[in-house]
Image (tube, rainbow, N blue to C red; front, side, top):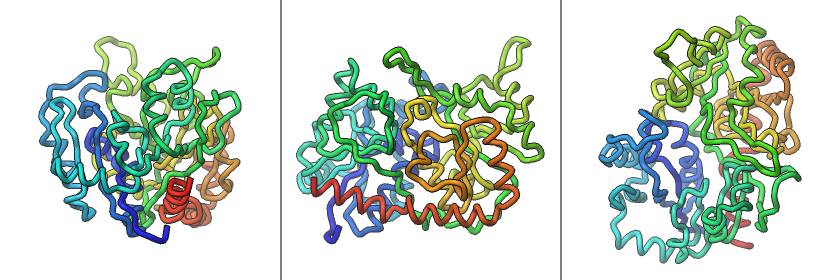
Length: 397
């Protein structure tokens, strides 16, 4: 875009203040647009309770106090020169923080574009005074099945938007037709935020959820979470020993302790050679998350079962951050090998044997793969390129 726009980005930074990677899912949009010279604001109005990590399924009493949640968001916005460019609605009391009511009203009246990343707005129709509403689907397959089914609320929320993007760049033919034109896009990565001069450890890592939510059924076929795919590769550490494979998990995701004599999920993983750490301890905020990636030798990770079986072409923003830091990624193929060059920097796998071979290849030729990783980040995930394309489509269609 040649002229500056007034843009609102939505997200879940405050809601997930104990999950550092979540902040970057939205910061890369905000900072990337700011870098392009646009007047950018961040609004969080999801209607969801703050996530405290004490129990993923309950409304923890600590969530009733908005202070820590608001202070975390304010700290991040101030860090990046956006101290007066944010607003957060605390859902329990429907109380707003950040921008005043007058300023929010004026912003909605004057904004050229609202980018609803991950569909995080609880009531997007309240934002229809903005010239254009853009929906960015970051959960392909699950999104399309949800809105094509009986969930009329989800369908209505998506229908409120003018333009629709998805990071599922090659959604499979088995998925439902939703009636929307889904423009393919990638996660934007502000590469200068990931420029890495940090000495890496000799460990391949990833940050992941075991199960984000329940599996869904479509036309008799189940589309599930990472736990299904991870089970296919549980013996990998022993095959690539002495290479260390580490997963940063959140405590509510798996069983860490038990009252009986049976081994917990954590103990079973460790017995199989996995190094397991608590994500809320090693990368609880945006800075520690970035440092965790930069100190890794590379990434090894599976994808959600739904992304794999749905042939979505999904490629995570987290993996994009590894690439920008010059860290090769060895990740389960969801179909992204159709739209990205692979073999150097990005090594896809489908089987246990392919995963083992990819790790050995990176270990043997690390410098070449690290250089290729940065090249791929620049060519395909650079925020300038990704966001300029998104804006051109959004404002001209």
